[in-house]
Image 1 (cartoon, rainbow, N blue to C red):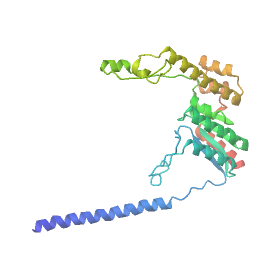
Image 2 (image 1 turned 180 degrees about the horizontal axis):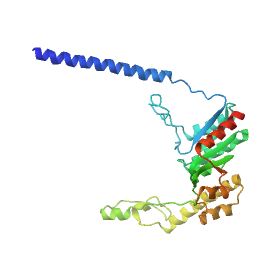
Image 3 (image 1 turned 90 degrees about the horizontal axis):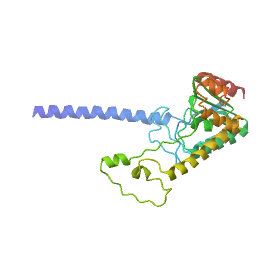
Length: 275
């Protein structure tokens, strides 16, 4: 009996200690949430737009946003991003926009919406700067609206034109003796091609080529308008693989200069302070 009470009270003591520790941890979490007030931007603010983030059509709320550090936040939608840019246009505290254009996690439609919002923002005469170590074509499509585009001296600009890679699974399915039941109508119904053929059909190649050429021509036209370089020259850069280094990007006038991240931020800080 003595042994029973010994283990009983030991377990009870452990439970009480655990409950007390858990209670204080809970109080700490509540205090951290309550103390995380609204951030202030000051009178010399710069809106940072990171194109690497994939902005969904509908915003995603992070239930732990208030509990973590600076990396925990709600993911805004494309509409939210556009609205933030529109608000920054009329907000006297916001002096400009800094675009991180290393990559672009958004599709053509979302990129077009963000780019249009940036063009509208520039009507306020506020500055727009863009920077990345290595600028992708997707990032450049949005960033070419910037007043200044910089890249890392050891980086560069990806300028190779558009391409598309397709994965075909029919050969694998045949080896596994799996026969999918596919129903489609018409020669240009290509959604099921990966499961029923081993290579692209002529019809799919035709429609894909037309689509890619249309998107690429739009990209060249928009770049030509912003950088004052004719589309034939831009097309030749890709065909000749002429942009192989950061210096090539500057010499071709696709990029305004070569700077490191801290140098670009110092320049932005000086401009914001002067406005």
